[in-house]
Amino acid sequence: RLIYTSTASGNHDLWIMKPDGSQQTQLTVDAAMDVLPTATPDNRYIVFISNRSGAFQIWRMNQDGSDQIQLTKGGPKTYPSISRDGKWVFYNTTDDWHLWKVSIDGGEPVEVAGYVALRPAMSPDQKMIGCLGREGLKRELLVLPASGGPPLKRIEVDRLTGNRVEWTLDGKALIYVTEHERVLRIMKQSLDGTQPEELARFD
Image 1 (cartoon, rainbow, N blue to C red):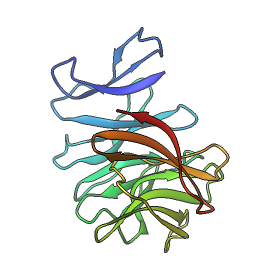
Image 2 (image 1 turned 135 degrees about the vertical axis):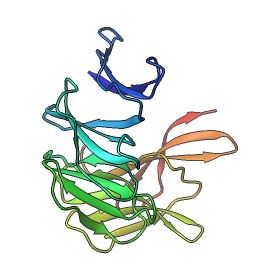
Image 3 (image 1 turned 30 degrees about the horizontal axis):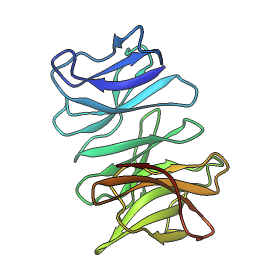
């Protein structure tokens, strides 16, 4: 099924439906904004961000919308991403865009990257994290060790947008989006540093 944000209720709430658009069901009902949903690989939980407690925080709920629990506190958080084993939620703090993680069961957060590392995505083997980086005017694809620390790879990318980064299933390349003169391109960048490959273009 597909989990998504909709304003059909008059508010930004989370909904779930079958891929053909049938059985659309509202999962959250509150006056706050509930957005950026992602599901654990075992389909047990949905993780999302909500500002119902003031600032945007990471929340977790069951797939039917029950048992909604706040996992983080403090300053605003965004871009939740779940580890392949479903045990960790990675996210960004919006004041400095550093990368953190918190257990899916809650607890004390752990800083993974003390530098700009946006839109985290874990590799299929769970050993690396792909992110979007920024250093001055440069925009980069970053590959970090899952345990934290300095980047293993930095690949400078021209006209990189703020959209998410994803791994190919074999873990050998990253997929990302660029924009130039109002043309969006989905690109594939191999970790061996060869020239990126254009997968799709949207004029």
